[in-house]
Amino acid sequence: MSGGNSAGGLTVLIMAAGEGTRMRSTLPKVLHPVCGRPMVAWPVLAAREAGADRVAVIVPPNRDLTPGLPDGTETVVQPQPDGTGGAIRAAHDIVRESETVVVLSGDHPLITGEIVATLLETHRAADAAATVMTVELDDPGSYGRIIRDAGGEVERIVETKHPETVPADELAISEVNTGTYAFAAQPLVGALDALQADNATGEYYIGDVLPIYREQGLRVVAHTASDRNVNLGVNTRVDLARATDQARRRILERHMLAGVTIVDPASTWIDAEVEIAADATIEPGTTLRGRTAIGGDSIVGPHSTVIDSQIGEQARVVTSYLDGAAVGDLVSVGPFAHLRPGAALAQRAKAGSFVEIKNSQIGEGAKVPHLSYVGDAELGADANIGAGAITANYDGTRKNRTKIGQGARISVNTSLVAPVTVGDDAYTGAGAVVREDVPPGALAVSKHEQRNIEGYAKRKAKETDGADER
Image (tube, rainbow, N blue to C red):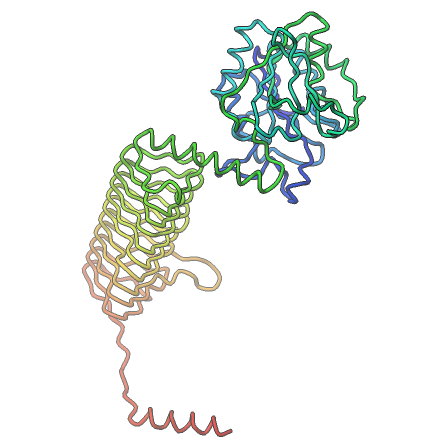
C-alpha cells in the first residue's frame, strides 16, 4: 500500500485492477483519457467532491497507474485478478479503519460527486448497513440483477456472466447493479472474510456480502439512480467513445450555464480541466485541451486548437493552433497562426496570418502581422515585424536569442541571425541579413549587387531541349 495512511470516517475504494484486455492497448485501460482526464481520475475526483476523508485505488501488481491518479491518492495492490470481492479484500486494513466505505469502479468515468452524495443520503436516511446503487435498463444484458424481498429491500445480486445458469425469471429483471455501493465498514470486515469464490468464474463478488449482511439482521437497501450513465463502464474503445461523448456534453453544458457562448456544441471539444470566463465565445470547430484558460469577452475560433494555453480578456484567436502559449488581453491571433510552447504575447500584441512564434516574448502592442517566424526572441513594446522576416535562431549546435527593442521596425524579408540585438527605434532595410547588433535609432542594410544576365532564358531553354533529346 502506498500514499497516506490517516484514518477517516468516509473512505472511498475505487476498483481499478482489471486487466482491460478488450481495450487491445498497451496503455492500462483506466489511464485512457476521457476529455483530457485519465479515466480513473474521474471517480477519484468525484469521491473528493462528495467529501471523502480517504480515497484509495485498488491497482494491479504489474501496471503503474500513478500517472493517472490525482496527488494524494492512495493505492492498494490486488495481488491477483480474483474479482470485485478480491479487490475490496485487498483493502481489508483500510476498511477496518473506516466508518463508512463507498465502493466505485475505476472504469466508470461518468460518476460524479453529486451522484455519490445522493447515494450516501439514501444510505444514511435508511439507516442501512449496505446500499447498492441500481438502474433500470431496457436491455440489462450481462449486468447483475437485483433481487428484492417482499418488503422491497435488496435480498441479493444475481451475476449473469453465465446466463445459462440463471433462471429465466431472474434474467428478465430490468433493475441491475451498477457496481457502486455504500457499506457500514465494521460489518464489511467480517463479510469480506466470509466471501466464497464458489461460482462459475472462481471469483469473489463484492455483491455477495449483501446476503451476509442480511443473515446478520442488517438492513440492505437500493438507491435507484435516475441517470443511466452511472452504469456506463468502459471495456472497449467503443465504450470509451460513448463515455467521452457523454462527458463532453456535460462539460459543454456546464460552461454554457456559466455564461459561455458555445456557438455549435456538436463541433466543439473542451477538456475537463479547461477554464472559461463568462461572456467568452467559442466558435464552431474549436478544440480546447489540457489546462487551458480563457478570459471573459474573448472569442476563440472558428477552427482553432488551444492546448495548455492561457488567453486573456477581449482577445481574438481565429483559426489558429496554440500549444503552451500565453496570450494577453486584447491580443489578436491568426488566422492560421501557430503559437508554440513559450510564446507569450503581451497586451494588444498581434500574431497575424501564417505567423509562427515559439519561446519568445512579444511586448505590449508589438506586431508580427504575417508570414514570419519568431523563435527564441524578445520583442519590445510596439515593435513591428515585416512580412517574411525571420529570426535565424539555430546555428546547428544550439539555439540563440534575438532581442528587438521598443518601437523597432524590421522590414520585409529580413533575416536576423542570432545572437543579435536590434536597438530601440532601429530599422532594417528590406531583405537585410543582420549579423551584427544594430544601435538604437539606426538603419541596418545589407546590399548585394544585382546582376542581370542577358539571354539566360534562351540558353536555359536550349539546355533543357538538349537534355530531353538525350
